[in-house]
Structure formats: structure tokens, C-alpha cells
Image (cartoon, rainbow, N blue to C red):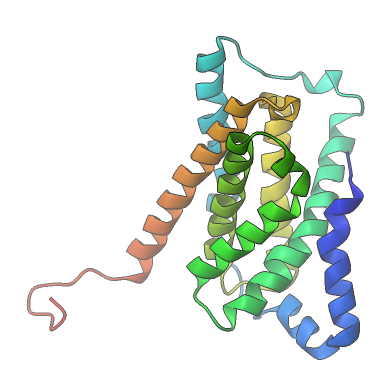
Length: 221
């Protein structure tokens, strides 16, 4: 359920806190702005899994749903473990590296960079087929874009819990409705494509919100 590698990013933050305590605390704490409604963000994992598992069931000819009661541990324990492990990663990715790079670059390129590092951190995936690894990297970059844009300007415990919850929900969805852990390429590629579609919609949504349309007579028209 939990892997020690999940806490590598948290360990890196702990080391940074010893070397640069003030800077690290400022980055992890983030701005004190109150976050907007979390529900649009927390609905995205369900959409990603739906867009992944649905086509995979059609392609393979069978649904790949797993009854939570058949897991080796209770589903509640698995869910809690997933959340803890996800937060162990997210304190490094979204709560430290993202705001660190954000001091120099915009939210979109920073999110792509963090997603790339996040994907390469899972070095064992690179030992799979090229298509499998590409699908996984596409997914980490796309999910990073969604989280980076959604949580930009949000700090502290809210940022950690929202990123961790999103991450855990995706993992739980993959556990229950996909079988990419077997090494099959199709589910991972579909997961990457589904994540990219959601990320593209999120980028478009952000652009529509932040850039008002020009009107007749506007000097910018």
C-alpha cells in the first residue's frame, strides 16, 4: 500500500528545511489566500478514470472493475494509506518545487516541468515498454498542469490536502478500474490521453476566466 519512495520528496523538503529554513518555510506555507471551492478540482480524478476505464473496457471487451472487498486490506485502510503516501509526494512536488520554480516562471511551464520531474521520479516505469513509459509521463505532466493551475496562489495545508486528495483519488481509481500494474500498455496510454484531455480543458477554462473578451471600441480589439 505504501512505498518508501513516496516519502522521498518529503525527505528532500526536510533536508531543504535544515539548510534553508526560512525559504523552505515560506515556500511550503505559501500565500495566505483563501482557496476557492475545491469541488471542481476534486471531480477531475473521477472524470480521468471514467475517460480511461470506459474506453479500456470497450477495447478489451470486459470491464476491469475490482470489488473493494476482495482487496488484501480493508478499503478504508487502503484509502488512508493512499492519502498519506500521496501527501508524502505532494509536499515535495506541489508544496515545494512548484512554488520554488513559480518565483521565476509562469504557472503553466512550471507545472509541465514539475510533472516531468514527478514522472521521471518513478524510475521503475522507464523499464517498461516505451509506449507505457510515454503514457505515464503524459499523465504526470497533465495531472501536474491541472494541479498547478488549480492551486496557483493557494498555500499551506489547503494546498497539501487538495493535491494529496486528488493524487489519492486517481490512484484509487486506477486500483479499482484499471490493470496497468500488470504491465499492459493500453490502460496506461489511455490514462495518459484521458489526463491530457482533462488538462487541456482546464487550461482552456483558466484562459477563459483570466482573459476577458474584447468588445467593440476596446483599444485591444
